[in-house]
Amino acid sequence: MSKLVLKNVSRRYGTFEAVADFSLELKKGEFVSLLGPSGCGKTTTLRMIAGFAPPSTGTIEMDGQQISAPSGVVPPERRRMSMIFQSYAIWPNMTVGENVGFGLQVRKMSRAEIDRRVDAILDVVQMRNLKGRYPSELSGGQQQRVAVARALVLEPQVLLFDEPLSNLDAKLRRRVREDIRELQLSLNLTVAYVTHDQQEALAVSDRVIVMSNARVAQSGRPREIYEQPADLFVADFIGDANILDAELISVNGGQGRLNVLGVELDVPHRNAEPGSVKIAIRPESVLLNAAPGSNAATPGEILKASYLGAHIEYTVQTTHGPLFVVDRVTLEPFGVGTGVWLGLCSNGVTIVPEPSR
Image (spheres, rainbow, N blue to C red):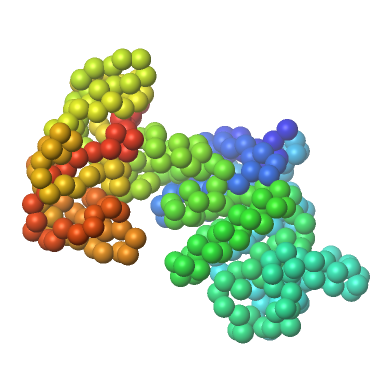
């Protein structure tokens, strides 16, 4: 039995539809991210799961029991769920230990039991030595761990995250997301995680739900979402793909032969018919060369170059328009205005299905 099931859920505010016909099943111990741009409906979906808003249509079930329907909802405090917000929402006038134990205090547990459970969960998040500190004495990452500990100490069946890392700098964000994933795996938690950061979603998730305009655009494992986008929106939203027109020359079994950027490549054809097709080219799959060759037949000119340490980002003007390129191997970077020749790695090229009519 699935842990959490959303069946054809929608949420309307007057004539505005914030979420439309959303269905999802989470298995016990699964980490699922809701990913998409601002306003796509992901936080509204999370709020319905938490019980803060009833669905306009559809139902939500947990362990086979209905907890939400248009006719009524089980209150948030009775759902065996904990939610961690973007702002952390920890109380500045309470110590770390008091913040973590507050929910247990509301449940009228004994002081001894509260202390035992608070100490145990602070050990899990490696914050026991900071139990007596106040939030103002903690870093952003430490405050986030307090918020996680406060949620976990209630022993929830489902853990909900709403943009939990958006207030952290890039380096700390990576470290905290690794901490969250390790905790989820070690405690076998079921997690629904909302973010607009594609790298974050790809890094921590068992499954990613990409949302657009209140609907599910694609659901799949991170690698599937990245390498096999379901439509132009997903291809463009995930990974800064270059979207081009190409010619599908022929189809043989599961492979299609493409003519793109002056070279021929074999790629999975995904039920496309020979003729003009849309393709997505990942920026790291474009090869830059100083001279033409068998896999470098399209000339270009460097318009922009940004050195980012581990790689260089280029914008290259071609007869197909400007292309975004990520180069991790060039020993001597190309300067702005330099002429180059472009090639391709076939494993970064995919045919994007046409929208259904």
